[in-house]
Image 1 (cartoon, rainbow, N blue to C red):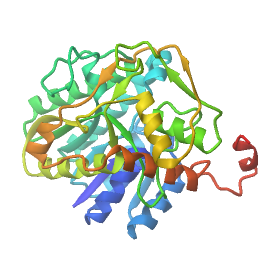
Image 2 (cartoon, rainbow, N blue to C red):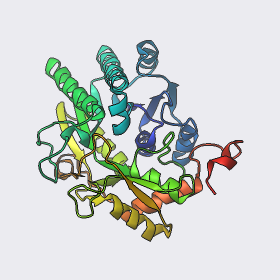
Image 3 (cartoon, rainbow, N blue to C red):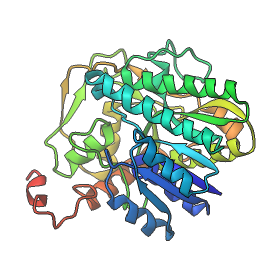
Image 4 (cartoon, one colour):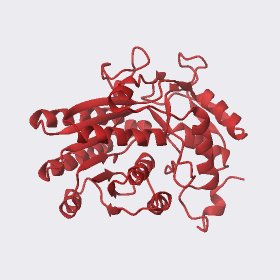
Length: 349
């Protein structure tokens, strides 16, 4: 069975491709490297011991994307590709709407044209906005607080409308909470461009000497220590959730949303303390103002995914910290080559 993975060289995408290959799926990856590195392709092959097809394609280029469909037999699509930073989306909303929504429209239009009606969509817990209570269940009202989340919600609504128009579609909407960690090999992990938008790569870049200190956005939330509380899930558990969702959509029709989280929330400072304890690395930090679009507390009720998909997060916060540090310590500047002339000036000493 052949699976097209959009954004397959990115953080979550690369880990999912590894799991797909390990499960003996045929994989076709498309990516434009806007927030990833071509080196991840060889690392995926190294970890899995298997090859796969790759096309450097931007989903906004419908013509180039169609060459993938016309040249490959595709049974299902796992759709990761998209811009993903909450804060940046507030600053450049038009770019987010154009990229995320137009790219997805091009993709589903071609899927329908080539009769590929199975999709696992990378959605987000941001579609819940600021929930009135936690843990969050899939039947909660949807009310986003930032443009990034709004693009995810709009795409969910588009996919529901697509199914209404053609009941042969089968779609899983996976609402992620906060993925962290890395593959246990240390060969692939989160490698953001510029200053990280997510907590764990910020922490690990401080630990490795690439950044001076962690900037904590807000310490005046109504949480036990004043910092934001999130549901952190190991990226390998998250990747395995995609395979379970894939099995589900291949065997049934319809549209269903699933939370992929652990069901437990940790504050920013709790994550810092856990990282320091498991790695022995001290993380200096300072507090700054809240980021626009952020909320106080967000963690999942994951029981629907366990019941319907047979999926449950298995890895704890200790493994998340250890695997994150293994990746960063073995790859201080991410996927860049250590022989790069800029390497010596990249680390802060």
